[in-house]
Length: 291
Image 1 (cartoon, rainbow, N blue to C red):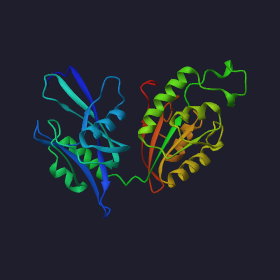
Image 2: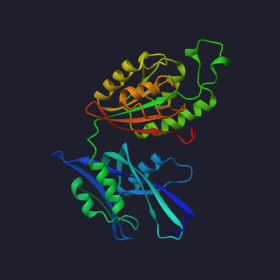
Image 3: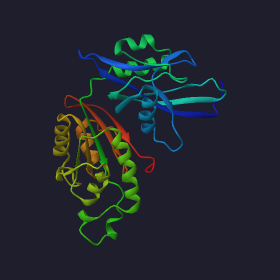
Image 4: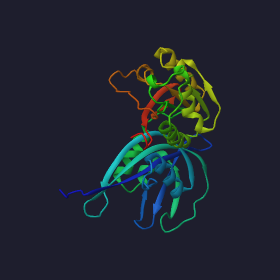
């Protein structure tokens, strides 16, 4: 077996839309250099988050503005260069706007095809496997990003009421990085637990923030899970900022998965996808500053 000396990281998506009749289509790209059909994807820029790269590369290769939803299986394969592999992270992405993409040396054509026919056109088995995983998913009807507030110093060092403890400078930095990722999800509404540090974590999104004590640290998980599910029933994308002690039992109650470690770092969170009010998938959302 050939020795692998380096791994090139890349990201992309299975980008879908619905026809007037309701049938799903996905966009594929033809690359003249390789004379192949593939899913849109590309290399991460230095210091770039993989989700940011996925949205950027999809737009650059297809001229489609797309909103990421569920994470799909990642693939890893040899590049043809000695000792070099490529690792690609994929997301299901909902197309929200698109225009015809002019042909160039990199992409000759970006073509919408019926989702069920895409595998017959794709040139590579690893791309076909990603599309199979996409086709096995229920249609996503809502997304909730559940995040934990960013760093706010130590409780023992704060002399005022704990609910008024603000973000520290490092927390403000992490909140800004988190908002950059949350913006990719194109949120429609923002809900926060009542402490100041929670509200400040989601304020960089620039949307009105509704306060809800249901997501406060000492609140019971069952009503919090019910409230989060009700937000999902409204459709679209909701960002909810909560606290570290509530989030693990809330997520356990929501997913009915007691075997999963739902501990969440400050300034990080989860992307939860719903299908008609039922959770259909989850994925961690962690800014590079928090890793």
